[in-house]
Structure formats: structure tokens, C-alpha cells
Image 1 (cartoon, rainbow, N blue to C red):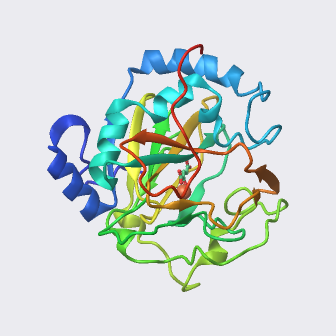
Image 2: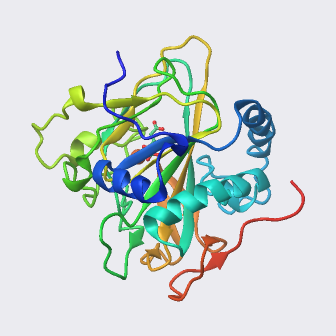
Length: 296
Ligand SMILES: O=C(O)CCC(=O)C(=O)O
Ligand SMILES: [Fe+2]
């Protein structure tokens, strides 16, 4: 497998305006370095133990570990890191919420994450988790995928197909039952079942594989076709934290007042709040909280 020749807009090579144009055109941008790899190694050593302690986790003993930025200080610092927030504000506007964090581990032998697209995060079950209330010229959600470990071609780094964010190849609003016994697709969910044209195949020749060092981020709209290859290494874990952002006009979980389900797990929402990481909220659609301070 070789890295496509397509240009990757990296680090500080571009002005804010150029970053905006690149993202609008391609549907992704990065990778950008946020922390030095050695620092992230020590952060990860701490976080992986903190993840085991679910005493203050808002979804209790839920195996998915979603939204642990709401109780783990290091994760809260990452989602509100000024170098991330500044870049996301440039793309989505000043008034910004972090509405979710999700883990994407890939252990040696783990399979590929199939190509997929999303925007409202119906995610196979139930209703849209996100509903914008204002018109937007372009993207109104994006993911900052933070590499907690190095992600290489061998360990299953992210891949995207640039410029695919303007066309829907998948119907993300289709409901498909969770099948824990399924060995294809995405941990019991099969993206094949969301294909608009069952015979469509992505143009792999346009795929851009994005190796990253620990502490780097790739930013993309989930509408841009994305996925990752299997981890074919013998002994290296690839660990990503997907940090999801929306502008404040977006209603988060508008139809899930008390809970949502995913991967067969229940996520009670009574302690949920979106984090206001930048600007202000004049809409009042969502329960909000601020980044954690003090302690660790
Ligand atoms: O980490 C991966 O393999 C996939 C990540 C992904 O699909 C996402 O962050 O939305
Ligand atoms: Fe995804």
C-alpha cells in the first residue's frame, strides 16, 4: 500500500483563510501537531488507567467510554486545547460545542473500519443526534481525530477520500438493527446496509492514507468518506480519540431526552452536557458545561 500523491495540508503551512478553503474543497485537513509524542505517551499512560475508574463517568459502567472528557481532566484539556479550538472555530464559527468524544482502539489483528459517511449521527439506531437550526454554507459538524499513539500504515491509520463530502453514498438515516454476532463492518453494524446504491464501490485509487504521530490530529467532516485499514502489526496498539464539534445552533440529542442506545449499550443522558469550548451560546438549545479545571 502506498500513500496517495494527493496533497495533504499540514501544520502551519497555510493561513487561516487557506485552511478554510482547503477544508471546504477537500472535506478534511491536517494532520496538525498539538503535543509532542513523548508528552502524549505520558498522558496516555495516565488516561488508560483513569478510563478504568468509572465512578464519575456520566454513563456509569458503559463499555464504550463515550464522553469521558466530562470526568477526565486530561481529556477535557485536549478537547479545549487552544490550537484545536482555534482551528475548528475557523471552520465552523466562533461559538463552538464539543458534543462527543469516542474511542477508536485498534489492537494487533483488529479489522479495518469500512468506508462510511455521517453528519447527523443517526448511527444505525433511532433518530438524528444532531439537528442544526440555522442555515450553514458548508459543514456544520466536524471530527478532530486525536492520535493517542502513533498510527501507521501497519497499525491502521485513518484514510479519507478527498472531495467526497458533497455526495451522499450512504444513507445515514436508515435504521439497521445491531447484530453483535456480525463479524463484518463496524463492531456489529454493517455500513454495507446503508449504501444508497448497493453496487457502488469507493474509488480506492483516490484514497489518502494518513499516518500520524502521537499528539497529532486529523480534522474531517464525517460526510467525507473515511475509514481505516486493519492493524497488521504484531504488538502495536493504535488508539484514536474522536472529538466531535458543532456550532451552538445545533441541537444535540433533540429527540433523546432521557437516553440513547448504541452498540447494545444504554447511554442515559441525565448527566450529559455539551462543552462550550469557544465563544458564547445565544441559542439555549443544549445543556452546557465548561472544560474541567483543577486536579487531574
Ligand atoms: O478510527 C477509525 O478507524 C475510524 C474513525 C471514525 O470513523 C470516526 O472518527 O468517525
Ligand atoms: Fe466515522
